[in-house]
Image 1: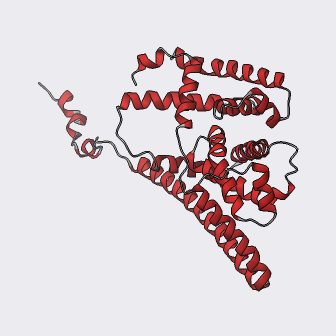
Image 2: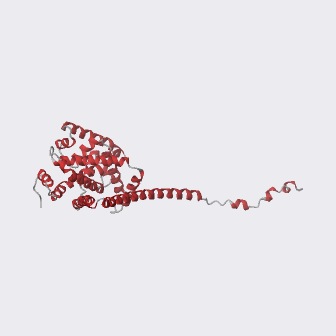
Image 3: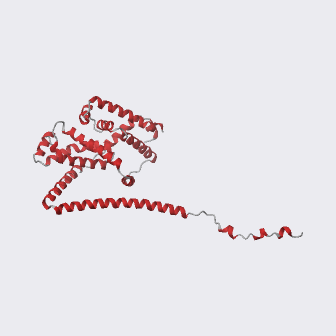
Length: 123
Length: 189
């Protein structure tokens, strides 16, 4: 849509268009099936805890701990990536050298300029 | 096959041990609840997750439904509260989750090619409208979403929000004014 088209709409038309676009989004057809499976899984895990007692409860705790560990690991990975990017940025920035070669000026032999004999010599 | 039982009958059957009745209830209300969630969360995946969470809660607490209001009103109320809580939770989240969100958005960016100019303007406008809706006070936002996303009458909204119809009308008016104010800069640019 071109900019002129947006210009011809008033603020509430923009809102209506936005709402219309969001209303057009449909949930996945499998949403209810997934929900029913989730409910069944929850019921089974509850029944499992009742049947196998402490062992089952331990399994659930173990799986939760695993989830917490993975989540922490993910965060550490993000933090490490950011630190690495910063470090690389600073290192690259510090290691940059311009194209001017300063050694050139050092190599010029200018001792002739200091030869006072040029000015004091008899003509 | 369409189940012609009323909501109350379905609830009664479920509470009497007919587990399959809950599937009927879920099929009847999942789309409705999904649209409400979209109004608050603006993301298909988040909204689906929210519908799941809410219906799981409903499944375990359907016995507490007293029948004082319609079942749909009760469900809407639970969904509205769940969405508002989720938004609060998101605001309180740390930087890591936000980085995660941004990365997920970038990863999902691909797809159909569009005219870059059109895409840029459309995205800008969408973001601005979304921000404007999100920045409304909770009550105005709720009234707005229930009206615009669900086409509910002021009477139905008043039953869900447990306020008078007059108050709903005021909230809707103020909401529209606020949206207009917040979107004026788009026209200016």
